[in-house]
Image 1 (cartoon, each protein chain N blue to C red):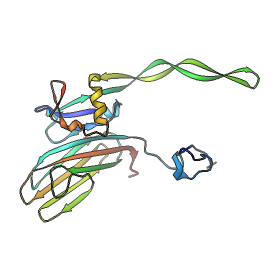
Image 2: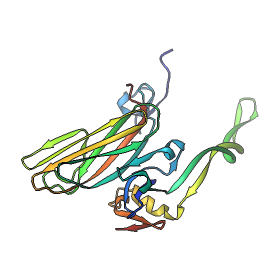
Image 3: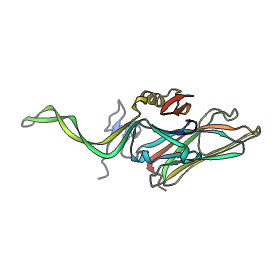
Image 4: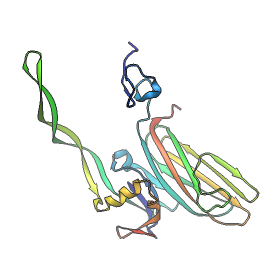
Amino acid sequence: MGDYGIRISKEGNDVKTCADKDCVITSKYPTLKGTLSGLGSISGLASGGSTVITINHSLGYIPFVKALLNPTNSIDFGNVYYQLPIWIDDVEDHLYSRVYATATQIKIYVEQWNAHGNTRNYNYKYFIFIDKAKL
Amino acid sequence: MILFFDKRDGQIFATIDGRVHDEQNMKCEIDNGIGKENIGKMIIGWEETSETEEYDVEVETLEEVKKGLFKKKNKTVRALRNKKIEHNMDKFKLLQKFESISEVSPLNYKIKKGKLIKK
């Protein structure tokens, strides 16, 4: 009875015989059901300071989450998105950030320090998958 | 899309993606530490309610014309869907730009008196 389910093959592949990797979807593996996603910004985070962004999802279970952080005005760390958690240091700059989840919220924590005492700006992108993280 | 902004200066600081927002989405809040009383919310798109409504939908059916022989036939049937409330549909074109891979980001906008203004 285990040999049932659905599969949809990529164009040009026979759905009856092709490998799983040539499928757009196969019920052989669990799939992510959808996401609650968005973006945000953090402005003027002081050197030596930290901040926490709270996203209340109210799902009632700990979801699988992913978040990315972009230091937009840091020459040393570049204008790129880092996947969290991240801890990067060089002689004059320090950035630490992590994302964590509970059954009702996800929190993005960011702290920074730099030798020049400059404030920093960040953009972040988050994805809360509507799937339990099996925790 | 749900936009969260600072009521004091109109600055958009966070978003929730999507065009149709169910009750779960609508309950979602983002707090950047400025205090709940300073956070405004604008929805662009549809709010899906738990209330349902019937609507007509055209479906393709097979009609047996004689034993073992079928003919395609279009038929209108009643179906159920969740009722949706429209929000700020006049800003829908801008929402499409926010969703595209262009450099147009809601974080570069402010909300003043219900209007989206580029910074």
